[in-house]
Length: 265
Length: 317
Ligand SMILES: Nc1ncnc2c1ncn2[C@@H]1O[C@H](COP(=O)(O)OP(=O)(O)OP(=O)(O)O)[C@@H](O)[C@H]1O
Ligand SMILES: [Mg+2]
Image (cartoon, rainbow over all chains, first blue to last red; front, side, top):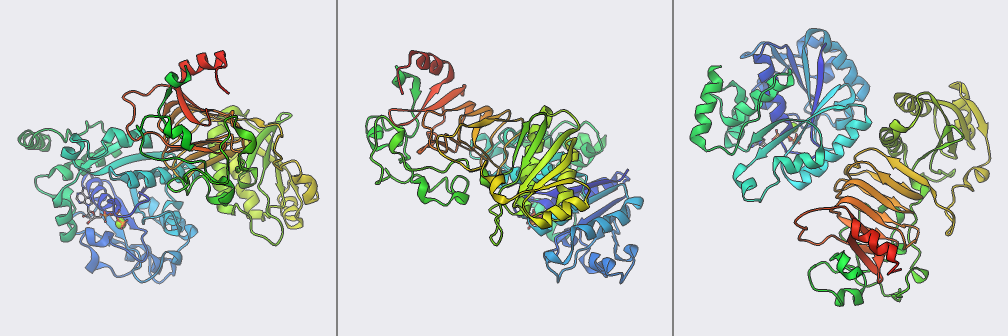
């Protein structure tokens, strides 16, 4: 059965697209057939994070308008042929597609894919409604900030109301040093409020920004950075593997040896 | 006795504040609730709503007679779901002809889903639901959406009461039995006259998340947390069997003897009748079940077990 997962947050800029790109790539590397969908019509950028911008010919809107077939619109990743992207139209606004059309698109994709990841735009308006219309599961992304958590909480309530009850939480951009000094919400603080199962914690890491700019998801790195490892682990937890959470507080040298160990496994 | 049982909350009358140690920074004040439009009263205004000692209200030590008319937990802003003679009545908020409802369809749908999520443990499967739509205008698709939401909670929509011809036609077309009534008879029951007996308690097992507001013209019991950004507004008491981190307003129609009880009292704001208080900025070292009540004309908080003792001695109120 195809798993249809929306990656959403409420607040903008917390890392939805970064998570979608990395999880898509991580799952594809583990031999799952994955399609990632950019549902941010008007402000698309999933293609950039995946380094696929220059290969887009058609978009989801062209498929809906019957100007091309679905397989013509899908952009296959050269590095990882299990992964493809269904691009959003750049020039349109969020009202240019309806929840029904979103369901139609996704319906066309289910037979040939194991995972469909939908990158949701910020907010709870039309773009959100489109993105969740066909989803069966959700990954809620938040940063450990009060405003982000507040919005995530709101979104969780909306997902529940829309009968999407399989929800998991990613806490992104955590800074262990700040948490230790009590200057940032801890993982526990966030979980206390949101009360949905945690699927991963991703540290704040400049390399995320570098990888964004290069269009190369971190999980493609030869030797994984801590953030890359966190994303890879989330990918494995999604398919049911029991993987302990990284201890982000451990001193660095230990960390690297542990990463190396995990990498050999 | 009551002083010792009460921990410092922001007091809400000037005298009270003067009589207490300066352990809190936020000056509270009796809020002129009657000046605020009902839609944005509790949820949108927590930061600005505590005006310094309301001038048009003479603080009276005995309490409630002279309070400005507060906003009751206006049932006209929310759907109501209650059982009556073995079936459930789903009452929609009013939507008089030629004016917009205070509750647009998308909000109404959300409220319904939230109530159903929070209450589904308490209904027998296949309980029959009568939809008391009043003058709320519903088309066939909306009726079907309501029926589907009910079905998801294993409830069955059978009958529709409406004063709108269009709704009646849509309901009949969809195969429900329809009773068309005049708007007046339907909604005379839902009016909020002061001194009226409270509704039955509303019991919900759910998390009240950010953006959710529960209003009820009676006592509210929540088995779960009230998160920051969530609020509960009740004409009676409020009991939170969980963390209270959002806003709670008890006695919203003016009953100052109402109470707010929580296992873990860490509210954004508390209100009882016309009094407002905020939690102290430095949280206590350890949380334990507490009760908020009005004592000496301001909101006080007592440890639950202490409160029962004080309460039995009748040393206040
Ligand atoms: N763990 C991280 N460490 C450092 N930077 C990060 C991390 N995660 C995301 N970022 C940066 O934050 C910015 C926003 O990320 P991203 O575009 O994924 O967020 P988004 O939630 O999709 O935003 P939008 O709501 O606009 O769609 C990017 O510049 C990204 O590189
Ligand atoms: Mg994005």
